[in-house]
Length: 115
Image (cartoon, rainbow, N blue to C red; front, side, top):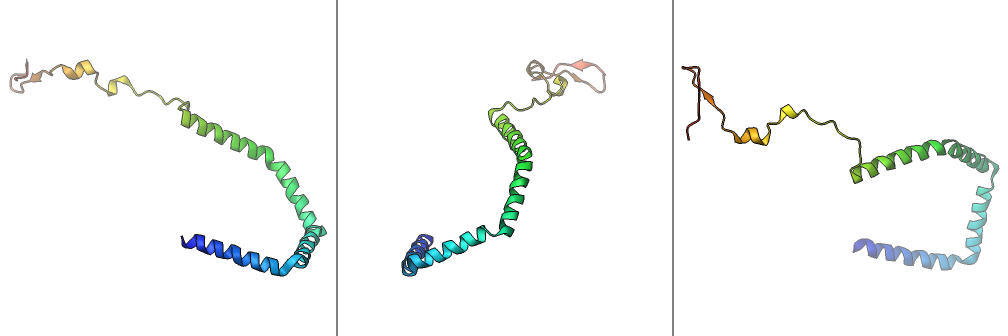
């Protein structure tokens, strides 16, 4: 709530100061901005940045495209298949249900488990 009040107060102060400055001050600021933008040094840098962006745009587009495809594959579950684990690692359900035979250490023979 405090942030909203501060924001509203800032808007009110900006409005009051803006209306007091009037159209003349606005024109001064706009002319200064135009003068800065049209300065040859600024335009030289703008051209350099444009050339750089044009040069790197295909690489960035490919990178973003690959990343987007990976995200879509992960979300939809169509990602790369994981190798299956060996079947011998897990006992089958039938083998788990059968009672195991115990060996008597003294006799060396298998005996049925007692219930």
